[in-house]
Amino acid sequence: MFGLIGHSTSFNEARKKAMDLGYDHIAEGDLDVWCSAPPQLVEHVKVESATGKTIEGAYIDSCFVPEMLGRFKTARRKVLNAMELAQKKGISITALGGFTSIIFENFKLLQNKQVRNTTLDWERFTTGNTHTAWVIARQLEINAPKLGIELSKARVAVVGATGDIGSAVCRWLSQRTGVGELLLVARQQEPLKELQESLQGGEILGLESALSQADVVVWVASLPKKLEIDKSNIRRPCLMIDGGYPKNLDEKFAGSGIHVLKGGIVEFFKDIGWNMMEIAEMEIPQRQMFACFAEAMLLEFENCHTNFSWGRNNITLEKMDFIGEASVRHGFSVLSLQTDMKASLA
Amino acid sequence: MPTLETIEVAGETDINTLPDFTSEKYKDAYSRINAIVIEGEKEAYDNYLSIGTLIPEKADELKKLAIMELKHMKGFTACGKNLGVKADMPFAKEFFSPLHGNFQKAFEKGDLTTCFLIQAILIEAFAISAYHVYIRVADPFARKITENVVKDEYLHLNYGQEWLKANLSSCKEELIKANKANLPLIKSMLDQVADDAHSLDMDKEELMEEFMIAYQDSLLEIGMDSREIARMALAALV
Image 1 (cartoon, each protein chain N blue to C red):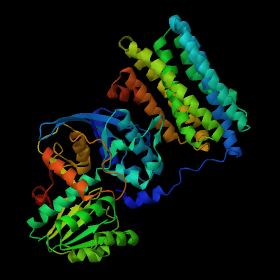
Image 2: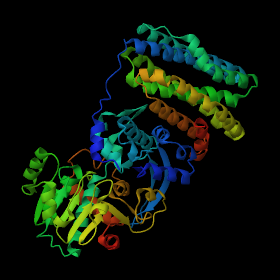
Image 3: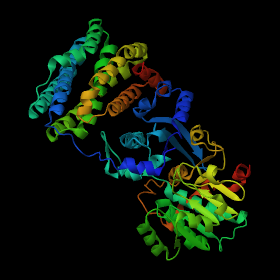
Image 4: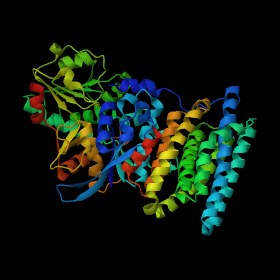
């Protein structure tokens, strides 16, 4: 069985969803009640691959909401409790969605193996980052040419280049895609230099100069709230792939030659009988999902019960090949501009 | 919407520091919390013996559980002594009196469902959750004792669960009714000790969450579904 750990995009959304599901006691509570609410296994689902193989899965809502990010202890408990529940339910491979893997990484939860009487078995969990990185790279390869951007000449900026997903995307783009030039952007300089060395190429730039030069921008860092960008400095056409979480590039950049594509999202070839993707605000919730969730499904389809994506900078091109090949074979396709175009032109 | 930057700032908080076990504030709060724990184990001892008289064929098993509770009581008494704290037993007696009263009423009526709900679900879940939170911030001596106690407490929770599970078809309505009357008492007990627990570095929010997890787990085990549990849990909020 595969598992997905997710959460609502805001406290208000979470309350609405809880009410719909009949969890009135939580729905009516204030944020403090939510901070004390246990994780819930809210949905079981069956998924049939394009190959005909059927697997079963479960969706666990951690009862975390982004409003809890300032409460360190609460956020930490939400993630660990949801992981414990997944393990107690005997789920073989569970993806950490939304803020879950970010909290796990940033709060260094690796040192919290013991949750009550359960010793967490990391082998049962995956961040899903390998599939996300592969999907973002493919989204770039498929969509840039649609806008008339020639990949072999394109200048591609990766914002958040030194992160787990960012560095994997950089490796893919320089060794597989062969883009014109890679512009590396991140907050810390030391890891950037190391990345540049390992790639044997790429130019380290500040955010503003990278944005003014790039034909394609891959965002895999969250957008600083106070960031003000002068849109007139951005090249046209420009493809922006919003691979961060939460996805908020659209409101800042979209329009007149700047095409924002939601990054790291895949679409399944047929409807899945679940309700929970609505809370992730997918355009077609019966088919679309985060690539990290799809990774748990793919690992289950492939009987590959291991923490496939784990820790930082362990994503190899071979792993991306493996998960990408499985993704196509089982019926996933990457989200492309056709559906997004209308929104960005509106 | 908060961003990664907010997380990084919040992430700097150190969660591994222990409280000062020798401070007056700590010892004062400990005198009440320790008394509650001792009294709780004592009540559990009495309650399991009482339940045994209602199911004579299980009396021996229940006596074994009761004796275990007595052993826990002695362990926790030692924890107080180790810190040089005198447990405030009159406070603890008063603290448990509403729940104690409800148990006695149910016992006199031979109402096993309510007896098991109070002792084996509510009190055990309350104890297990508090012990789990306490283990992380306890002094080394108390930590060891509490870790051993927790292992035993799961057995007790299971015992009550098994009985309720086997009898669910006939006792479900009674169980829901008993829950409605008694779960609010647990909530108010938690509220009463929130400040003292805080002095021991135990957050009310975390205590409540741990309780809800144990409570939810045991009701699921009995055979209630998650929406029924959601409705039952509502009683703790009103």
